[in-house]
Image (cartoon, rainbow, N blue to C red; front, top):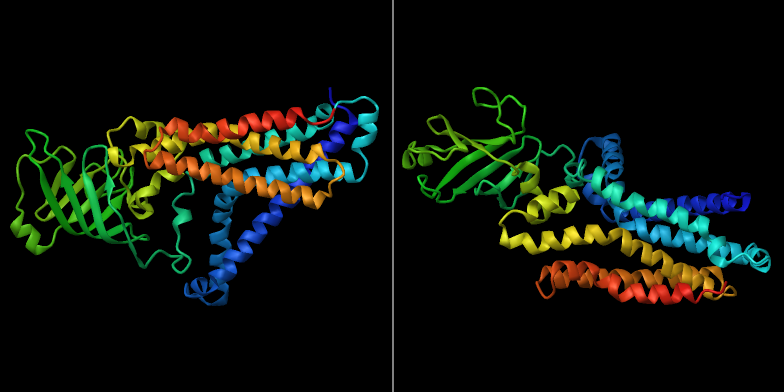
Length: 377
Protein backbone atom coordinates (compact mmCIF):
# COMPACT_ATOMS: atom_id res chain seq x y z
CA UNK A 1 0.00 0.00 0.00
CA UNK A 2 1.41 3.35 -1.05
CA UNK A 3 1.62 6.13 1.52
CA UNK A 4 2.45 9.82 1.35
CA UNK A 5 5.97 9.11 2.59
CA UNK A 6 6.41 6.44 -0.09
CA UNK A 7 5.42 8.86 -2.83
CA UNK A 8 7.73 11.52 -1.41
CA UNK A 9 10.71 9.14 -1.28
CA UNK A 10 9.99 7.87 -4.79
CA UNK A 11 9.74 11.43 -6.09
CA UNK A 12 13.06 12.28 -4.41
CA UNK A 13 14.65 9.25 -6.00
CA UNK A 14 13.55 10.16 -9.51
CA UNK A 15 14.71 13.73 -8.97
CA UNK A 16 18.12 12.45 -7.85
CA UNK A 17 18.23 10.10 -10.82
CA UNK A 18 17.49 12.93 -13.25
CA UNK A 19 20.21 15.11 -11.70
CA UNK A 20 22.81 12.31 -11.63
CA UNK A 21 22.07 11.10 -15.16
CA UNK A 22 22.04 14.58 -16.70
CA UNK A 23 25.29 15.42 -14.90
CA UNK A 24 27.04 12.26 -16.07
CA UNK A 25 25.79 12.62 -19.65
CA UNK A 26 26.78 16.29 -19.78
CA UNK A 27 30.22 15.57 -18.34
CA UNK A 28 30.79 12.76 -20.83
CA UNK A 29 29.67 14.87 -23.81
CA UNK A 30 31.72 17.93 -22.79
CA UNK A 31 34.90 15.92 -22.28
CA UNK A 32 34.44 14.03 -25.56
CA UNK A 33 33.57 17.22 -27.45
CA UNK A 34 36.62 19.18 -26.34
CA UNK A 35 38.86 16.17 -26.88
CA UNK A 36 37.71 15.85 -30.51
CA UNK A 37 36.94 19.49 -31.34
CA UNK A 38 39.57 19.45 -34.13
CA UNK A 39 37.87 16.49 -35.79
CA UNK A 40 34.52 18.28 -35.77
CA UNK A 41 36.19 21.36 -37.22
CA UNK A 42 37.41 19.36 -40.22
CA UNK A 43 33.82 18.47 -41.12
CA UNK A 44 33.44 21.79 -42.96
CA UNK A 45 30.27 23.72 -43.63
CA UNK A 46 31.21 26.77 -41.58
CA UNK A 47 30.37 27.44 -37.96
CA UNK A 48 26.67 26.72 -38.43
CA UNK A 49 27.39 23.47 -40.27
CA UNK A 50 29.81 22.33 -37.57
CA UNK A 51 27.31 23.14 -34.81
CA UNK A 52 24.57 21.27 -36.65
CA UNK A 53 26.85 18.26 -37.03
CA UNK A 54 27.82 18.32 -33.33
CA UNK A 55 24.18 18.42 -32.24
CA UNK A 56 23.19 15.64 -34.64
CA UNK A 57 26.19 13.50 -33.70
CA UNK A 58 25.60 13.61 -29.94
CA UNK A 59 21.84 13.27 -30.25
CA UNK A 60 22.52 9.67 -31.34
CA UNK A 61 25.58 9.10 -29.15
CA UNK A 62 23.54 9.90 -26.03
CA UNK A 63 21.77 6.53 -26.39
CA UNK A 64 25.13 4.73 -26.45
CA UNK A 65 26.45 6.76 -23.51
CA UNK A 66 23.29 6.01 -21.54
CA UNK A 67 23.81 2.30 -22.20
CA UNK A 68 27.15 2.53 -20.40
CA UNK A 69 25.95 4.72 -17.54
CA UNK A 70 22.51 3.25 -16.81
CA UNK A 71 23.52 1.06 -13.85
CA UNK A 72 26.03 3.51 -12.23
CA UNK A 73 23.46 6.31 -12.49
CA UNK A 74 20.86 4.16 -10.72
CA UNK A 75 23.32 3.24 -7.99
CA UNK A 76 24.39 6.84 -7.38
CA UNK A 77 20.79 8.09 -7.39
CA UNK A 78 19.75 5.47 -4.84
CA UNK A 79 22.81 6.19 -2.67
CA UNK A 80 22.20 9.95 -2.77
CA UNK A 81 18.53 9.51 -1.88
CA UNK A 82 19.25 7.30 1.14
CA UNK A 83 22.21 9.44 2.25
CA UNK A 84 20.13 12.60 2.09
CA UNK A 85 17.37 10.95 4.14
CA UNK A 86 19.99 10.08 6.75
CA UNK A 87 21.51 13.56 6.68
CA UNK A 88 18.14 15.30 7.09
CA UNK A 89 17.03 12.84 9.81
CA UNK A 90 14.12 11.56 7.75
CA UNK A 91 15.10 7.94 8.34
CA UNK A 92 15.50 7.96 12.12
CA UNK A 93 11.86 8.85 13.06
CA UNK A 94 10.50 6.06 10.88
CA UNK A 95 12.92 3.55 12.38
CA UNK A 96 11.98 4.77 15.87
CA UNK A 97 8.32 4.13 15.04
CA UNK A 98 9.15 0.49 14.39
CA UNK A 99 9.15 0.63 10.59
CA UNK A 100 11.81 -1.75 9.20
CA UNK A 101 14.58 -0.27 7.08
CA UNK A 102 13.66 -2.42 4.11
CA UNK A 103 10.12 -1.06 4.25
CA UNK A 104 11.38 2.52 4.35
CA UNK A 105 13.56 2.11 1.28
CA UNK A 106 10.97 0.09 -0.66
CA UNK A 107 10.10 3.09 -2.89
CA UNK A 108 13.81 3.44 -3.73
CA UNK A 109 13.98 -0.23 -4.67
CA UNK A 110 10.91 0.16 -6.89
CA UNK A 111 12.35 3.25 -8.54
CA UNK A 112 15.69 1.48 -9.03
CA UNK A 113 13.94 -1.45 -10.70
CA UNK A 114 12.24 0.95 -13.12
CA UNK A 115 15.43 2.81 -14.04
CA UNK A 116 17.47 -0.40 -14.29
CA UNK A 117 14.99 -1.72 -16.86
CA UNK A 118 15.66 1.33 -19.07
CA UNK A 119 19.14 0.00 -19.87
CA UNK A 120 18.05 -3.32 -21.44
CA UNK A 121 15.14 -1.60 -23.20
CA UNK A 122 17.51 0.94 -24.73
CA UNK A 123 19.87 -1.86 -25.73
CA UNK A 124 17.18 -3.97 -27.36
CA UNK A 125 14.97 -1.40 -29.09
CA UNK A 126 16.91 1.83 -29.62
CA UNK A 127 20.55 0.96 -30.27
CA UNK A 128 19.79 -1.56 -33.07
CA UNK A 129 17.69 1.07 -34.88
CA UNK A 130 20.37 3.76 -34.78
CA UNK A 131 23.43 1.52 -35.17
CA UNK A 132 24.23 3.06 -38.56
CA UNK A 133 24.07 6.59 -37.15
CA UNK A 134 26.43 5.66 -34.34
CA UNK A 135 29.13 4.98 -36.94
CA UNK A 136 29.12 8.50 -38.40
CA UNK A 137 32.66 9.89 -38.24
CA UNK A 138 33.27 13.15 -36.40
CA UNK A 139 34.99 14.67 -39.44
CA UNK A 140 32.69 13.22 -42.12
CA UNK A 141 29.01 13.94 -41.41
CA UNK A 142 27.97 13.40 -45.04
CA UNK A 143 29.80 10.10 -45.39
CA UNK A 144 31.71 11.10 -48.53
CA UNK A 145 35.20 10.15 -47.32
CA UNK A 146 36.64 6.70 -47.88
CA UNK A 147 36.74 4.52 -44.79
CA UNK A 148 38.45 1.27 -43.95
CA UNK A 149 36.26 -1.83 -44.14
CA UNK A 150 36.56 -5.34 -42.78
CA UNK A 151 35.46 -8.69 -44.08
CA UNK A 152 32.10 -10.24 -43.30
CA UNK A 153 30.63 -13.71 -43.54
CA UNK A 154 27.14 -14.22 -44.93
CA UNK A 155 24.98 -17.19 -43.82
CA UNK A 156 24.87 -18.29 -47.48
CA UNK A 157 28.56 -19.13 -47.12
CA UNK A 158 29.98 -16.18 -49.05
CA UNK A 159 32.97 -14.36 -47.58
CA UNK A 160 33.14 -10.70 -48.69
CA UNK A 161 35.87 -8.13 -48.21
CA UNK A 162 36.58 -4.62 -49.37
CA UNK A 163 39.55 -2.29 -49.54
CA UNK A 164 37.66 0.94 -48.79
CA UNK A 165 34.11 2.23 -48.72
CA UNK A 166 32.01 5.37 -49.08
CA UNK A 167 29.11 5.43 -46.61
CA UNK A 168 26.94 7.96 -48.44
CA UNK A 169 26.80 5.87 -51.63
CA UNK A 170 27.08 2.49 -49.85
CA UNK A 171 29.88 1.78 -52.28
CA UNK A 172 32.87 -0.50 -51.76
CA UNK A 173 36.09 -0.07 -53.72
CA UNK A 174 37.84 -3.31 -54.66
CA UNK A 175 35.20 -5.77 -53.58
CA UNK A 176 36.20 -9.42 -53.13
CA UNK A 177 33.72 -12.30 -52.82
CA UNK A 178 34.67 -15.93 -52.18
CA UNK A 179 32.06 -18.61 -52.86
CA UNK A 180 32.53 -21.96 -51.10
CA UNK A 181 32.46 -25.26 -52.90
CA UNK A 182 28.92 -26.61 -52.90
CA UNK A 183 28.38 -29.23 -55.65
CA UNK A 184 27.51 -28.74 -58.39
CA UNK A 185 28.87 -25.23 -57.80
CA UNK A 186 32.68 -25.11 -57.58
CA UNK A 187 34.59 -22.76 -55.31
CA UNK A 188 35.62 -19.54 -57.03
CA UNK A 189 36.40 -15.88 -56.43
CA UNK A 190 34.97 -12.69 -57.86
CA UNK A 191 36.94 -9.45 -57.80
CA UNK A 192 35.05 -6.26 -58.64
CA UNK A 193 36.42 -2.75 -59.09
CA UNK A 194 33.44 -1.47 -57.15
CA UNK A 195 30.28 -2.76 -55.52
CA UNK A 196 27.17 -0.87 -54.45
CA UNK A 197 24.77 -2.21 -51.84
CA UNK A 198 21.03 -2.04 -52.54
CA UNK A 199 18.76 -2.57 -49.50
CA UNK A 200 15.60 -4.70 -49.75
CA UNK A 201 12.78 -3.02 -51.60
CA UNK A 202 14.97 -0.57 -53.51
CA UNK A 203 15.15 -0.29 -57.30
CA UNK A 204 18.30 -2.19 -58.09
CA UNK A 205 19.92 -3.14 -61.39
CA UNK A 206 18.09 -6.50 -61.44
CA UNK A 207 14.81 -7.05 -63.22
CA UNK A 208 12.02 -7.40 -60.68
CA UNK A 209 13.78 -5.36 -58.00
CA UNK A 210 16.16 -6.29 -55.23
CA UNK A 211 15.50 -9.73 -53.67
CA UNK A 212 14.60 -10.03 -49.97
CA UNK A 213 17.67 -9.44 -47.85
CA UNK A 214 19.24 -6.96 -50.27
CA UNK A 215 22.35 -7.44 -52.30
CA UNK A 216 25.41 -6.05 -54.05
CA UNK A 217 25.75 -4.84 -57.61
CA UNK A 218 29.26 -5.80 -58.74
CA UNK A 219 31.08 -4.06 -61.59
CA UNK A 220 34.16 -5.90 -62.72
CA UNK A 221 37.07 -4.09 -64.37
CA UNK A 222 38.15 -4.79 -67.95
CA UNK A 223 40.95 -7.07 -66.82
CA UNK A 224 38.71 -9.09 -64.50
CA UNK A 225 36.02 -9.34 -67.20
CA UNK A 226 38.50 -10.82 -69.69
CA UNK A 227 40.06 -13.18 -67.18
CA UNK A 228 36.72 -14.25 -65.65
CA UNK A 229 34.15 -14.67 -68.42
CA UNK A 230 30.61 -15.72 -67.42
CA UNK A 231 30.69 -19.26 -66.12
CA UNK A 232 28.07 -21.92 -65.66
CA UNK A 233 26.64 -22.90 -63.38
CA UNK A 234 26.56 -19.78 -61.19
CA UNK A 235 25.62 -20.11 -57.50
CA UNK A 236 21.95 -19.39 -56.83
CA UNK A 237 22.78 -16.15 -54.98
CA UNK A 238 24.88 -14.74 -57.86
CA UNK A 239 23.16 -13.43 -60.97
CA UNK A 240 24.69 -12.21 -64.21
CA UNK A 241 23.27 -8.78 -65.09
CA UNK A 242 25.40 -8.28 -68.21
CA UNK A 243 28.96 -8.93 -69.25
CA UNK A 244 31.19 -7.64 -66.48
CA UNK A 245 28.33 -7.03 -64.03
CA UNK A 246 26.84 -9.33 -61.40
CA UNK A 247 24.32 -9.04 -58.60
CA UNK A 248 25.16 -10.84 -55.35
CA UNK A 249 22.22 -11.54 -53.02
CA UNK A 250 23.10 -11.61 -49.32
CA UNK A 251 21.07 -12.42 -46.25
CA UNK A 252 22.87 -10.33 -43.63
CA UNK A 253 25.91 -8.63 -45.12
CA UNK A 254 25.14 -5.01 -45.89
CA UNK A 255 27.33 -1.92 -45.97
CA UNK A 256 26.78 -1.14 -42.29
CA UNK A 257 27.97 -4.59 -41.29
CA UNK A 258 31.19 -4.21 -43.27
CA UNK A 259 31.84 -0.72 -41.92
CA UNK A 260 31.23 -1.72 -38.28
CA UNK A 261 34.01 -4.25 -38.37
CA UNK A 262 34.08 -7.65 -36.74
CA UNK A 263 32.08 -6.43 -33.76
CA UNK A 264 28.99 -5.41 -35.74
CA UNK A 265 26.85 -7.74 -33.64
CA UNK A 266 27.51 -5.64 -30.50
CA UNK A 267 24.50 -3.48 -31.43
CA UNK A 268 22.28 -6.42 -32.36
CA UNK A 269 19.23 -7.27 -30.21
CA UNK A 270 19.20 -10.47 -28.21
CA UNK A 271 16.95 -12.20 -30.77
CA UNK A 272 19.56 -11.61 -33.47
CA UNK A 273 22.31 -12.92 -31.20
CA UNK A 274 20.32 -16.09 -30.60
CA UNK A 275 19.97 -16.51 -34.35
CA UNK A 276 23.73 -16.06 -34.82
CA UNK A 277 24.39 -18.79 -32.27
CA UNK A 278 22.58 -21.28 -34.49
CA UNK A 279 25.05 -20.68 -37.32
CA UNK A 280 28.33 -22.45 -37.82
CA UNK A 281 30.79 -19.55 -37.50
CA UNK A 282 33.56 -20.77 -35.16
CA UNK A 283 35.62 -17.56 -35.40
CA UNK A 284 33.12 -15.44 -33.51
CA UNK A 285 30.83 -18.04 -31.97
CA UNK A 286 32.37 -17.74 -28.50
CA UNK A 287 32.15 -13.93 -28.47
CA UNK A 288 28.53 -13.96 -29.59
CA UNK A 289 27.69 -16.56 -26.93
CA UNK A 290 29.36 -14.48 -24.22
CA UNK A 291 27.49 -11.38 -25.34
CA UNK A 292 24.19 -13.29 -25.42
CA UNK A 293 24.56 -14.58 -21.86
CA UNK A 294 25.76 -11.15 -20.69
CA UNK A 295 22.53 -9.65 -22.04
CA UNK A 296 20.55 -12.28 -20.09
CA UNK A 297 22.36 -11.60 -16.82
CA UNK A 298 22.44 -7.79 -17.16
CA UNK A 299 19.30 -7.12 -15.08
CA UNK A 300 20.64 -9.43 -12.36
CA UNK A 301 24.11 -7.86 -12.23
CA UNK A 302 22.70 -4.32 -12.26
CA UNK A 303 20.33 -5.19 -9.40
CA UNK A 304 23.15 -6.70 -7.36
CA UNK A 305 25.23 -3.57 -7.85
CA UNK A 306 22.43 -1.33 -6.57
CA UNK A 307 21.58 -3.57 -3.60
CA UNK A 308 25.24 -3.82 -2.57
CA UNK A 309 25.63 -0.05 -2.72
CA UNK A 310 22.49 0.54 -0.66
CA UNK A 311 23.63 -2.00 1.92
CA UNK A 312 26.93 -0.17 2.37
CA UNK A 313 25.20 3.20 2.73
CA UNK A 314 22.67 1.89 5.27
CA UNK A 315 25.21 0.06 7.43
CA UNK A 316 26.68 3.33 8.72
CA UNK A 317 24.10 6.11 9.00
CA UNK A 318 26.71 8.49 10.45
CA UNK A 319 28.91 8.39 7.37
CA UNK A 320 28.90 11.59 5.28
CA UNK A 321 26.82 11.24 2.12
CA UNK A 322 29.74 12.31 -0.10
CA UNK A 323 31.87 9.53 1.39
CA UNK A 324 29.02 7.08 0.87
CA UNK A 325 28.74 8.09 -2.78
CA UNK A 326 32.50 7.69 -3.19
CA UNK A 327 32.34 4.23 -1.65
CA UNK A 328 29.60 3.26 -4.11
CA UNK A 329 31.74 4.56 -6.96
CA UNK A 330 34.67 2.38 -5.86
CA UNK A 331 32.34 -0.62 -5.67
CA UNK A 332 31.14 0.12 -9.19
CA UNK A 333 34.71 0.13 -10.48
CA UNK A 334 35.48 -3.24 -8.90
CA UNK A 335 32.17 -4.65 -10.08
CA UNK A 336 32.75 -3.63 -13.69
CA UNK A 337 36.31 -4.88 -13.59
CA UNK A 338 34.86 -8.25 -12.63
CA UNK A 339 32.40 -8.02 -15.52
CA UNK A 340 35.19 -7.20 -17.98
CA UNK A 341 37.34 -9.98 -16.54
CA UNK A 342 34.58 -12.54 -16.99
CA UNK A 343 33.96 -11.34 -20.54
CA UNK A 344 37.67 -11.62 -21.36
CA UNK A 345 37.85 -15.16 -19.98
CA UNK A 346 34.81 -16.15 -22.02
CA UNK A 347 36.03 -14.49 -25.24
CA UNK A 348 39.39 -16.22 -24.98
CA UNK A 349 37.83 -19.60 -24.26
CA UNK A 350 39.22 -20.03 -20.75
CA UNK A 351 35.73 -20.55 -19.34
CA UNK A 352 32.39 -21.37 -20.92
CA UNK A 353 30.22 -18.44 -22.10
CA UNK A 354 27.48 -19.04 -19.48
CA UNK A 355 30.06 -19.15 -16.67
CA UNK A 356 31.75 -15.97 -17.91
CA UNK A 357 28.41 -14.11 -17.73
CA UNK A 358 27.36 -15.57 -14.37
CA UNK A 359 30.79 -15.26 -12.72
CA UNK A 360 30.12 -11.72 -11.35
CA UNK A 361 26.79 -12.96 -9.99
CA UNK A 362 28.48 -15.91 -8.28
CA UNK A 363 31.14 -13.65 -6.77
CA UNK A 364 29.06 -10.64 -5.72
CA UNK A 365 25.74 -12.40 -5.10
CA UNK A 366 26.63 -13.93 -1.70
CA UNK A 367 28.41 -10.73 -0.66
CA UNK A 368 25.33 -8.67 -1.52
CA UNK A 369 22.97 -11.01 0.33
CA UNK A 370 25.13 -10.96 3.47
CA UNK A 371 25.62 -7.17 3.33
CA UNK A 372 21.92 -6.45 2.78
CA UNK A 373 20.91 -8.87 5.52
CA UNK A 374 23.28 -7.09 7.94
CA UNK A 375 21.44 -3.77 7.52
CA UNK A 376 19.99 -2.64 10.85
CA UNK A 377 16.23 -2.82 10.92
